[in-house]
Structures are given as structure tokens and as C-alpha cells.
Length: 179
Image 1 (cartoon, rainbow, N blue to C red):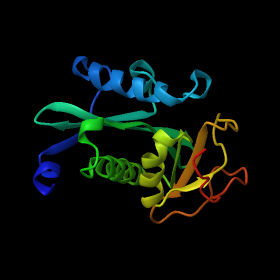
Image 2: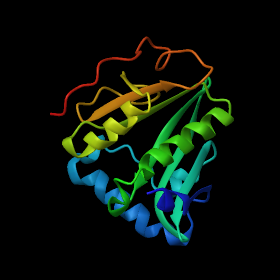
Image 3: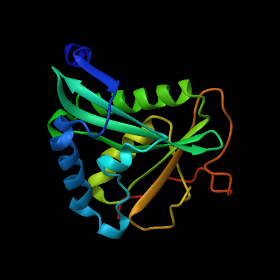
């Protein structure tokens, strides 16, 4: 595993790069596999290219195998968006490596906390476990999100920062069990 992770590079790139189509398509398919369309909050490549969003690609031998983005929310907060590692690369620590990279980038940009939305369905259990293992705790909806039984909202204060989920009193809560 060490040789594999050493051969993997994560860099900031444009989500509109032509060789990312397969990665974007796989992410989209995974999001639609268990989640009703009205509960899917992923951003397409064009939306990920917007100002205020930093997009990162994970490559192995030049081939894109993962991605993740940071969206600035204001008030020192950011959101993890579109984090995805291709299924055939999972289980080797690469998802955690991407998450650690996003957290380090957020801290370097001066963000005090990170938030995210992920699915509540069984297919998202590994993602919820990854986020919980990285110090994220369940919280209430933030930014423009609303209560949704298909969504789990999580937050994490970054090193050196204090604060709850979103300033609306929706601080950390117990992790819900999968439906």
C-alpha cells in the first residue's frame, strides 16, 4: 500500500479537463444508484469550476482515479464537495488521503471548519465511517440545505479553530444508523 500511495499525486486542476469525463460519469452514477434525484446535491463539472471552489484530482500514473473539492461558504467555513475515488481503488487508504488533503488545503486557506453532506443510504456507510474516523460529527443542515431523510450532514472544526456546525445552533449530534 505504501508504494501505491507514494505513486499517487493530488493536485489542483480544472474540473473541465477533458480526461476527467470517466471519473465524473462514475461519480454521477454512484450518486444516482441509491439516492432519489431531489436529494442529490452533487455539482457537475461546470459548477465545480465556479469561483470559490477549489477542485483537486488524484492521479495514479497520470490517470485520474479520484477527486474532491472545497467550496468556500463564508464566515471561515468550507464544504467538502464531490469527493470520490473510483471503486476499484477503494480499500487502499486513498479516500482518507484525499480527505486529509482537502482538510490540509482548507486549513492552509484559513478555514476554521469544514462541513459536508453525504447520503444516509447503506451505500454511503463507508463514506460516513470515513468522515467520522476523520473527526467529523453529525450536525444539522447548513448553508442552503434542508432536512432530508436521504442526507446526513457532518462538520469538523479544523486545528486551531473553535465552533459548531453552522452558527444556527445545529452543532454535532449522534451519528444516525443506516435505514
